[in-house]
Length: 305
Image (cartoon, rainbow, N blue to C red):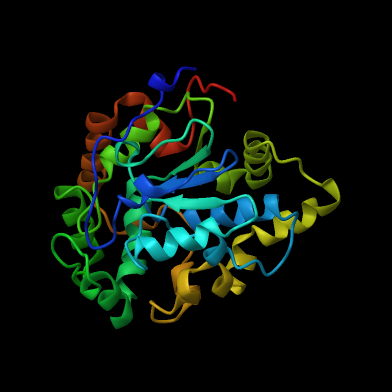
């Protein structure tokens, strides 16, 4: 495929979390792996899976340190770029950017994880409501922030959801454009779409598909260890190694960051009208096929890699 067929960066994104300019100075390697989500869609889980595939089921890997969120604006990009440049293992990095704010390499491999937006919000509320003062200071007071500060969430998760819907991802960043941008490049040979629900239903099968996509052979003698180390119970028990700064930014620590790993909690809170409004919005913003995938994890007419 010609280089012209691959996405080109169109803009920069800045806010209390983002500094997308870091990708302008990032030096790709041919075997880099980029793990992308909107947020709270299974990013940490897939980072753990990739680490297990690359390091053959080893236990105790410092995944958060090995796989940094590149476009998070803290620490500053000159520090982060120097750190990832010294890595000698196959790099697997994290982003929450839409495609048009990302420098896209035809040689890197991209895994995008989707999740129903209602489940995203319920997980995000836990993340936000349990953030401590250190979290707010890092995001709001560190020099270089563009735009308004992030404030504590309302006490009502229903209000949080309705604000997120009405203001497209508030107080984090736009949701629908992130999904659209990755869905639109789903058939590129170096892009693999994954869904949180599919991963829950068939983790072994999805891990094997990820391994095939990454051209990483599985050592069958280590397969049981890989599955164990990718389980929710293992990750919750060993959360300090997989959560940024060992969970220091959240009350309750790393185990708060890795919350419940379940879907559908919104059903006990949202009214049928609120839930239907979300589904209608998804179809309007994404189209029928993408909205169906986001809702169910079933991808019609998927193109195998």
